[in-house]
Length: 326
Figure 1 (cartoon, rainbow, N blue to C red):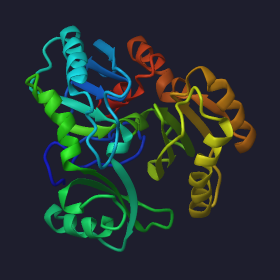
Figure 2 (tube, rainbow, N blue to C red):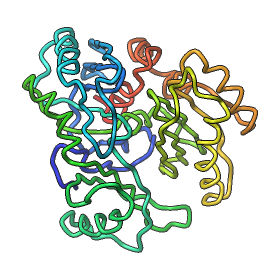
Figure 3 (spheres, one colour):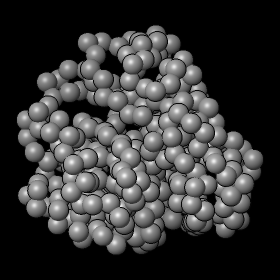
């Protein structure tokens, strides 16, 4: 259910749930997934046996080669990106006809919209969603790709989790792949791809930083309840712990007001050498356990290859595998 075939057209049952109702369960799920981020280009090829990593490669990008934005051109130095991708593909073998493509969080805006009802037919639902999004996105909604899924709110009301991106921005990333004969069967933001690593019980706060982008997510069981992505003044190695808390607090306050409770745990990712500083700050303020994504119940059950990826801060590649059970 999307305005373009390449954008993740139906999240199916959004949420970090296990067993049959995984994210993207009903979507194409290529065995090769590529992440293009401001810091690197990475790819992993997963075997048919779920959780088995066949091969992976990662190549750094020069600073400023990609500047993520929902509005403006992202590929500042496309030749550098293409060169890194060429080296990655040389190590993971032929990319094949279709790959999963993970893009930076700022490219994809995520909203949780209340509705009394929404038509089941995509061609009827899409105009309503674009009308609701019109005042919420910094670009013309008619030039966007839109994806959505339904979930039940706390009171059983209909909520529609909606992801929207500017079409020409998505095409920048797709065209880089196409220059190597590959096609993006599914496009997803890196944090959305990561969420299946979270616990599917209680309320979990994810604090994930990539470059200067801080993405804050709260999931309650199978529900996505909060999704907030902001730009910080500096990268994780320099950002002040209190400044990070100030960015996170609005998401926590919203969750408390909406769901009438506190989060049960915090998971953090991408905080680098200062991770312990942020752990102590979050634990001190929220009074709940704080741990890395490698410490989740799902992560602890992973095979060694997947764990190696996570230790290299390549969580989205692992989350992609869990999304569809390759």
